[in-house]
Length: 338
Ligand SMILES: [Mg+2]
Image 1 (cartoon, helix red, strand yellow):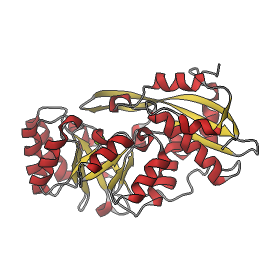
Image 2 (cartoon, protein in one colour; image 1 turned 180 degrees about the vertical axis):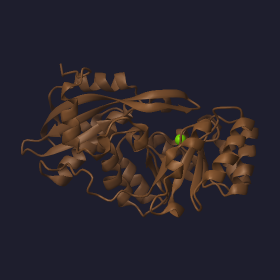
Image 3 (cartoon, protein in one colour; image 1 turned 120 degrees about the vertical axis):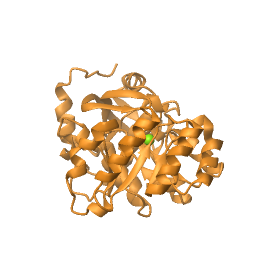
């Protein structure tokens, strides 16, 4: 592919309505980058770089430096040569390049007119979950609603108490998944899983840190509640390693930080994995790509983890990529090529 592409990028800043608390700490602003590729025929592809350095991806500054280091015209063949140390950049550029080729016209940007797959709703951490409006707004199909709640943040006794109240507030038939972000000890994970078994919790996500893979394998054999790996499978290499080490549980995939989306799709199409497609609080640019080019290319599975739009103050969710791009034209963080 010796095509020459016009390349431009615009950093964005999205504050959360309230900080997101999990075992890694508190997070209050999503920083990312939108990018735009255009070929000689006027075909446009939109991409997004949404790093998550506490999951091991590059930082936003590293991603920005990479974008700034590129000229305003790049060779398409260079996209496949982005180093593995920049997985969020690999995703952003490859997804933009693929969309440019796929849609083949300047109207490649389809906002809001596609059917999104069922998604789980992320509740606030701690007791705030009990007052979350999302719990009380009955959807058209409450029995198919899935909620997610973070644990491993406060002492286990306190969290178990809140958990019992939370379960009693769930709409009839709704599912609940828990996410510890690697914040539990073996004993705590075992205790949580016993409780989860009693309540039919959908799954417990990343109970132990990634370096305790063998223990998580053991835990998964002791309990009925499935365990999902998330931090353990942040990149495609890690995903492949866990699969080769006989992980038969759930894989939570955060595509924007996994690396090459094309290699990811090939791997998922080749192997029958139990997948949850999860959010890194990306904009609709990355989310629509994931829904169209990854989720829709595989058999339907569990609810995705994209139910996070209520975490933002802005109204970007319905915007097209072009509209988002225009919103960012006056962004003070705008940084240009060298
Ligand atoms: Mg997680």
